[in-house]
Image (cartoon, rainbow, N blue to C red; front, side, top):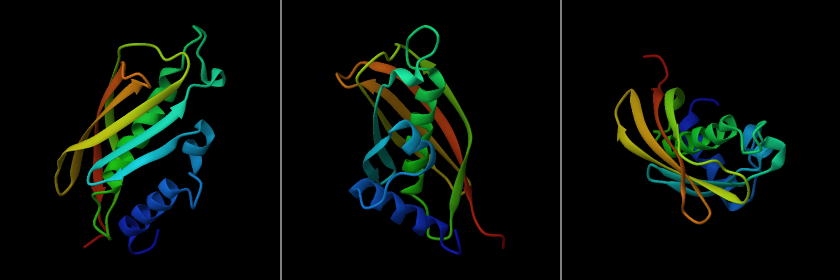
Length: 146
């Protein structure tokens, strides 16, 4: 990412949000859309696709985790200094309802941003606002040596 990874990540997310650039990696594969980004928050949406079902005929929990992990990562990006980067250290998820069809929405926010760690929460809801899952995660803030 060069000498200013934080700036590059923020600029990339801004172009993804405006549609100037497509999302990369898992976001594109799963059809995630970045709806809002900034000030320690993010909002992502995706449509449930039967290709991502588990054997019970509901959206696989790992796909739900992918969406929520992307949301906390993007919320973290919005807080980075120009020379900072980050990586997910851990997260815990509680699942409340299955997702079977329709749009799902992941809304993430920074709870506490320290020098080395950021703690975030993310709620996953159905389009009609029913709580599907909640994630609490930790991101390590990375800086260049020295």
